[in-house]
Image (cartoon, rainbow, N blue to C red):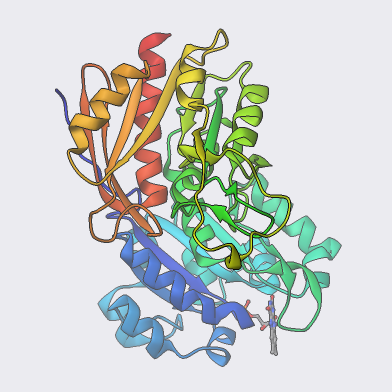
Length: 407
Ligand SMILES: Cc1cc2nc3c(=O)[nH]c(=O)nc-3n(C[C@H](O)[C@H](O)[C@H](O)COP(=O)(O)O)c2cc1C
């Protein structure tokens, strides 16, 4: 048995967070907190304009370091010169990136601290732009962004939606978690490039009558994190989602279903050509024999529900003529986790099973975090408690190695 230790992709990263002058600067405080939660060390450089929108004290308190706002701060320069700061950073993240600062990066200006540090550093730069939709769509901004992209600067967003100025369109800063996910994916190896992965996620709802159903507590977050991380690792991802209210990860093809029967149909329709199948959905084991056409009245007194087992999608995929090379199941258990997980691995002829102890505190269902123990027929891998995205990335690394060993 071999065990794979796991650390967050951002643990130990030294991130210089550049904050420019825009309304979205307030979101950068949350972004900074999340970066630190991931184990990153963060130092903040604010432009002069940014200080009109949020106080340096907030970032100082959240980062644990003095915030730099000027090239001409003698005390700060004496402690760590701007060149040392540029050398210190392993990544530069500019969020929000204003139209003005993007333009200045293109020009190679070095007339304030942020632009000077960017010029003096060879760390990868990521920009999360935020601006009015017409500023973003303006030919000047678009040309600037395309020049920076050619130079290797990464862009996250902007997202679409309602803007602080009251307009609706593309220009909002991406949500802090999406920015973090993008940063993590820049650190993820492209181990799944050229691979096709089919993932199921979320619960299924089995209708009893037009207003009632049998469901379960799956939020779909683990399956969606797997889809996002697999895409970030280069895979072509199809996601079959039960009823959840989650955004579709970037560049992932999503099919929505409701019941176990619909999920089965969608999975079988998408199976051809897949290299990997990951059954992360919490598919109902039973469904009502009949769905009442009208709402069942309480006046009827006690209600006996007649249930029949649903199809076992995972077993069917593993036994299918179009079986993907790697079939991965999930086992959410409340006791004897290893025993039940290993049993399911053998019985269903899976390549891997990812087991989690859903009775554990703060992991699994309805939680932001997870921890998994993954079994193959011969190995065991422990993925420690972390965000579902990070746990997904760790599981996908194990899957990628399995694919390599079968190639
Ligand atoms: C209330 C207000 C909101 C602004 N919001 C933005 C914004 O969201 N994005 C942007 O690019 N510029 C915005 N600006 C304009 C920038 O603050 C301005 O271009 C500034 O020079 C940017 O400086 P910097 O790039 O050094 O931070 C805003 C200005 C004001 C007065």
